[in-house]
Image (cartoon, rainbow, N blue to C red; front, side):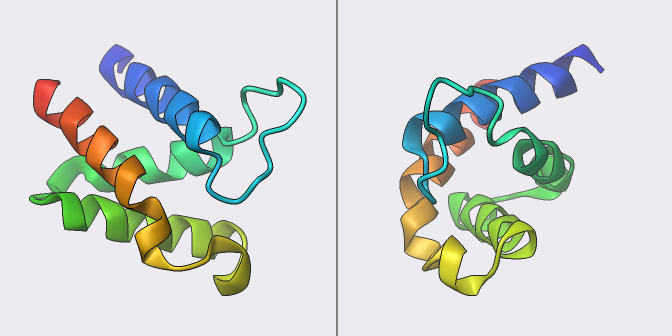
Length: 89
């Protein structure tokens, strides 16, 4: 449970730093909390960084819409950093 919560917090910070849809303004560091919370449970069976990118993009489309989420490529750097975090554990 602690690992799950730590990963959610790490992802929340990662999303805030990269701010893929431009909503992280004014120091509200939990702006991406709902998205991080829905992404982490889906990461259990990922095998590649592409799996991670797909999941992150799908969740942003779910929470917002296709136009706001933008192309999947927008999430590549986020996916790479998250993948590295998953590999380290």
